[in-house]
Amino acid sequence: MSRIHYELANVESPFAWRSKFALAHKGLAYESRRTAFTDIPTICEGRHKTVPVLVDEDGTETCDSMAIATYLDEKYESATPLLDDERKARTEEIEGLLGPHGFKAFFPLYILDIYNGLPEKDAPYFRESREKRFGATLEELGVNRDERLLAAREGLQPLRDALGDKHWYNGDNPGYSDYVVLAFFAWLKGCAKTPPLAAGDPILDYIERGFALYDGLGNTIQGGPLAA
Ligand SMILES: N[C@@H](CCC(=O)N[C@@H](CS)C(=O)NCC(=O)O)C(=O)O
Image 1 (cartoon, helix red, strand yellow):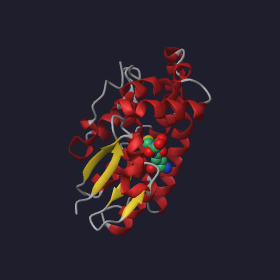
Image 2: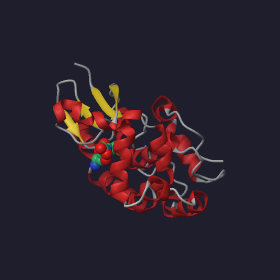
Image 3: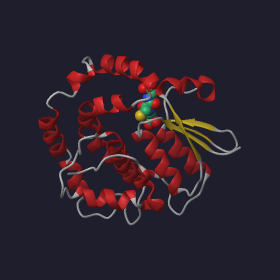
Image 4: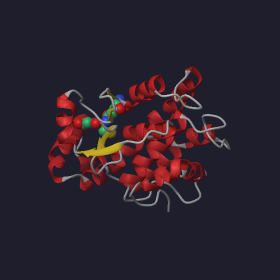
């Protein structure tokens, strides 16, 4: 049995990208199965509600990016773990910064881009579920995007400050805290039809370095430029 990683069709899920970097960190090969939102209930006989889901070679199923990282540490040794206490603390720090200023700030701005790129069968589900979640239409969510994009970029300043001139947030080598940041930008690169960052943003060097990891894993993402 081969190792299977279920991820989204037509969307670079930020959570799936955490797992993809984690698998690469462990040097593990896998088959990516791109799954429509509306097909998630067909994965593993409906046992999981979200992706990523990892089905390991022995059939062990793990759903949830953090659970996958923990599972990989337990099952597979690597030069450095993904999430020992120290690395977990760094990951929590980074999530604390990205939480309010990352996905939450940028998702409404690009929600229509995501919607427009979905497989046809996912469109009604996505519209209905997200409009219910946000209490607004997808069109309303993206209103005044250019103006709000400036504020969203500004909102990344604590992340820029935290990264500073560090090569990696994790330490001498990249680690899970870096994968969390890189996964966020992987998602943005995949969905944003208008570049989310300004040219010359100091965070771009870090992203470029991170996307080049593991034979350019991040550079496999089809998408527009992150900055203009
Ligand atoms: N806590 C989960 C969150 C995963 C998640 O929310 N995945 C989204 C895709 S990015 C999903 O599968 N959503 C299913 C849906 O909206 O129906 C993790 O870290 O893996």
